[in-house]
Image (cartoon, rainbow, N blue to C red):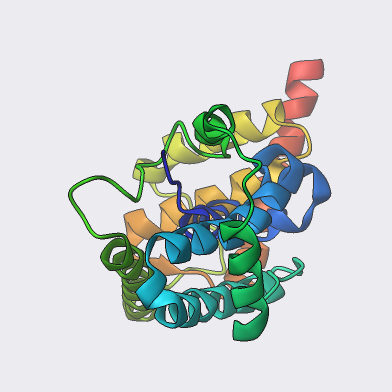
Length: 228
C-alpha cells in the first residue's frame, strides 16, 4: 500500500500557492479539501501500524497541524481540524474495527492528490514512526532555515529598476500571467520568489506594492498589444 504524506503536500500548497490558496477555485484544482481529510487519515494509518506509538504520533502530528494552521490563518484559509487525543483514539478504534475495506479498495490509494509527484513515506526498509518523525522534523527545520535566510537578505528596492539579468524572467512571467487568466497574482508571487532568490532580496509591503503595480501595468500593456 502506498502512503502519501498529506501534511507535506499541504505545506507544499502553502509554499507554492501562497495567498491564492484562499480562493475556492485554487483549492479545488489542488484538491485541498481532500488533503484535509487525508492528513488525519494518514496519521490514523500510521497509528494503526504502530500501536505502541499512538500518543507520540498524535502529539507530533497535531503539533504539525497547529503549525500549518498558523500559516493557513495568515492566508485566510480555514484551519485543519485538530481532534483531542480521546477523539483520535475513538477514530482509531473505529478504523481498526472497520472490516468493510477490501484489497481492491486499498489498491486505489495511489489516487490521492499528489500521488504522481511525491515519494511514498513508508517502505519495507524503514520504520513507520521514524519516517513520520523525519517528515515533521524536516518541515520544521526547513521553515526555520528559510526564515533565517529571509532575514539575512537585503530589502528589495521600492523604486522598480529592472536589471539586465532579470529582464528575461520578468518578460516570461508577464507572458505567463497573460495566458493564465485569474492566476496573475500567483504568477506575481512566484516572480517575487525568483527575484528574491536571484538578488538576495526580501520584499516588505512597500516593495511588494511597488513591484505589484509595475507587474500589473506590464500585463495590461502586453494584453493591449496582443489585442491590437
